[in-house]
Image (cartoon, rainbow, N blue to C red; front, side, top):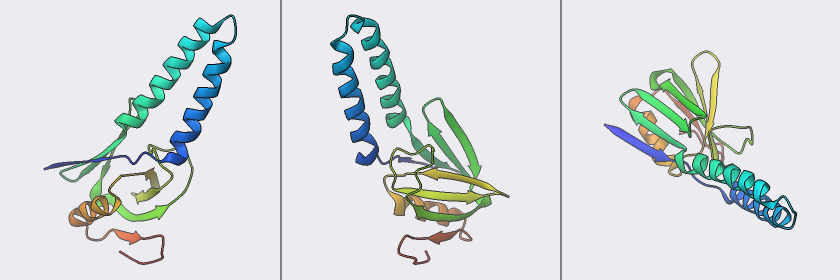
Length: 142
């Protein structure tokens, strides 16, 4: 059975982007080359919105598929996942919020994701791989 977890959209990422694009848009529209600049700005904003909308994490069978637009599409064998930790690590990743889960898998694999329903996601992974160690922010073990 396939279970899709949408990425949480964090205001800490969305608000600065809206401000930057809004201010840049106002500056561009006040210059003579506003049409070209406006088109470039609009395309860039559409691309970022596309990434925010299409970022999701799918559990199907024993596979976790992590997708972020057409830029990132990876599959992880759930039996290779060793640890899931809550984190606020700001590294670039297929996550649209700073409220993230760090997944450690295989020999040295690591990915940061931000499912909207973190606890349901963790339960789903643990149901398929009970050996996964869960480390919550409060230091409690899951």
